[in-house]
Image (cartoon, rainbow, N blue to C red; front, side, top):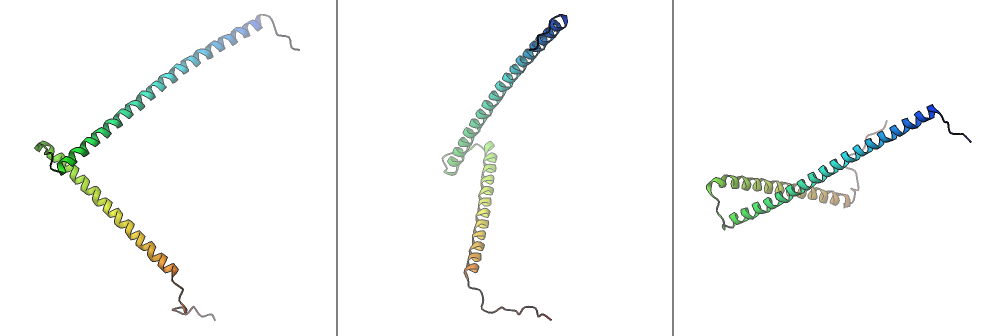
Length: 136
């Protein structure tokens, strides 16, 4: 078996190893502290985003309710807000027009698919319409 070295050189190596271990421990502690700080910041940011989303959903629900009440004649807006309501109405009209265009495209696609299905199920013609190229 190897016998541990003793003497001043061995003592210096042990001291150097202990210093390296303490340095590594302090670096680990500092890193752990930074990770915990970043984790806390990330959680705070996620919570803030959740609160913003809840606020946006509440505002959307309020806006939809107000617009519904305006359409039904239960509510009239002051003149200063009429322009904003007009912008919402125009955006809704554009959205509905876009939805109609999508429906039209889907209907055209379905019609084309139906024509292809009909063509595929039809029996092939008995004789070709044009004769093939002649070989010499």
